[in-house]
Length: 104
Image 1 (cartoon, rainbow, N blue to C red):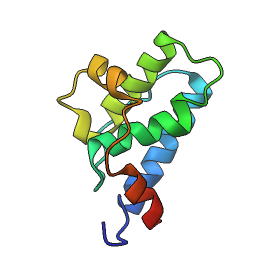
Image 2 (tube, rainbow, N blue to C red; image 1 turned 90 degrees about the vertical axis):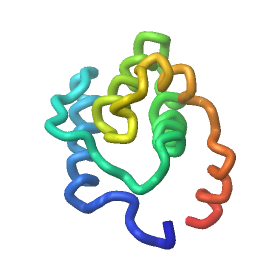
Image 3 (cartoon, one colour; image 1 turned 30 degrees about the vertical axis):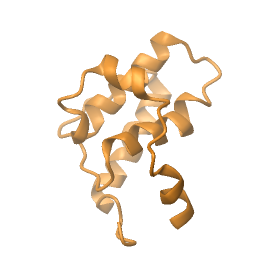
Image 4 (cartoon, one colour; image 1 turned 135 degrees about the horizontal axis):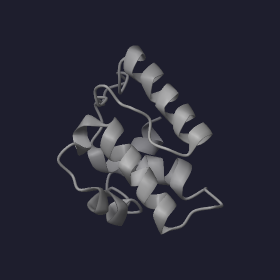
């Protein structure tokens, strides 16, 4: 993305709030308007998987579906994606992911 931020500071702040609410309450926050990001959907879901889902000691299918629902509700790019599809593809590494990580 040529060094540009992947989302506006306002949307990033909202994302932080949604994540905090999610972890404090173990439930999906009310999202007024899904957030936009300049990275592709597969990279968003895989990053959430690596950072949160894969590291959750209480992870099971129900909890992973909750993460998938979070992604579906919070990110605009998932508005037309079934939650079950997000769940099934969480751990699928995008082919370009290593290149993104190396560029940071």
